[in-house]
Length: 302
Image 1 (tube, rainbow, N blue to C red):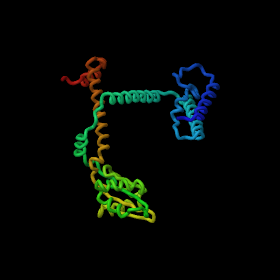
Image 2 (image 1 turned 135 degrees about the vertical axis):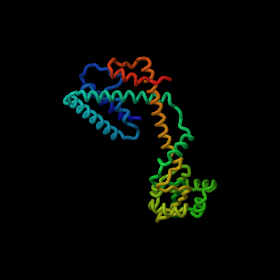
Image 3 (image 1 turned 180 degrees about the vertical axis):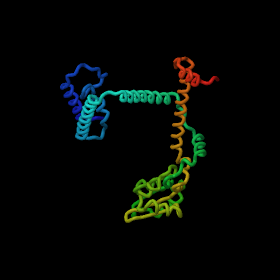
Image 4 (image 1 turned 45 degrees about the horizontal axis):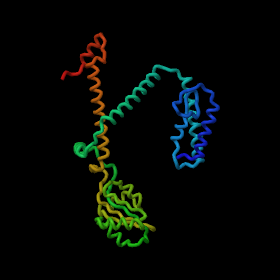
């Protein structure tokens, strides 16, 4: 919520600019204009959306001032550009192409939202993965497991050294209870992959040294002058290995979803095309090239 003080500042901006403005009546569609430049309007509603709770009144006023000033400068620069750059067929073509693309993209998104709601199944993910495994190669080492950091003088370190090795249900329960009051950091990520670099960054060891140590033992302990670090790598993948399917699932789902959407839009366009040709909505003219095109482009008889 905006503070009362900030609301007052916004209201003052609106009042000052409305008093200073001597323009002809304009339909603002219920919005409150704050400032205008040559028929371009900045509205109070646009400004209000920019600010969220967490800013002090001083910060908010500074942000408001900067935003309005930048908006005015851009509006003035645009007005000058329009005056000094002659409208050409190329500019009009680019504007029209952008307008068409905007309408098409919005309509396409609505069609997909309304008519294509099927989820990608696990079976589809697995089939795609097996058929395209070479697409999913790790570019860095990854691991699953447990990371824990405790102060060097923490109690029950001998117990922790037993618990973190096996990670059975009882051990995990003990570790979780212990971590609530004694751990500086505790992360159990046996169901998700982490980059080895992100794990090594939490300890006094480099990624390459950690990888070298994990090749010989998946349960490690490190220490520095203040803390003790425990690692249990329940799974380890090296750079250049295939990503397991659970690590590639998000990527595969996105690929399949994009392909499904593209095929759906392609089918919609094909149906529109054939319907328009059949109904005569598409007209060919009576010159030789048009007659030839008409014969080529007619949909195949079913």
